[in-house]
Length: 249
Image (cartoon, rainbow, N blue to C red; front, side, top):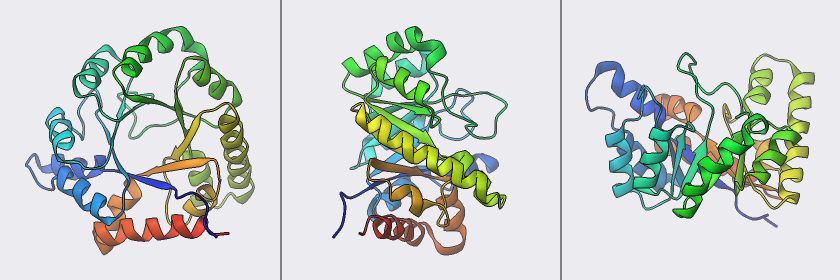
């Protein structure tokens, strides 16, 4: 027997990172998105950063035209990004914290301290038909705040769990995994749709994929790295296989 099928969203940011290292047009993140779609991705994630370090405005234009699966548009809660999202009206908008000096997103959004601002910020996005997701830590206070401001979806940050696994810190890893498990169930009980992502690999994906409340995993950096060795299509297909295996009971 198989539980409800878990969606895989593939983040193609780091195809653009490789492209931008040389300043040309290759490799093309839109081509990567189409390959991921054909390999079983249920959606594509792209983070348009304020400094445009990887994905560009032109990439978003082309993704909106090319994709047959939903685009999950990751963005900081700035006026500029809101304008871009309202112009394109992607299927989903995921609000993430963003600092110029960070290499990658380092943690979840601080929703509880900015409830009023974020509630007003996401209202036009919801009115435009975008599903609004908030990227947060597995923390009850943040989940409650995300629910109060009107988010429909939360994405739980799995980075600490994955980092502890990579460092061989089993006790810390298991503690983080348990927090993710408990907060997935708690968020679901509030009526929020639960997604998860950040740092997931073939070694770490199954325990998170097994949570029945989680509807979608968003995975990027690992899959783009693995594509160097096995190709993007087989890399995505293997992740899809492992996610399906985790849902078998």
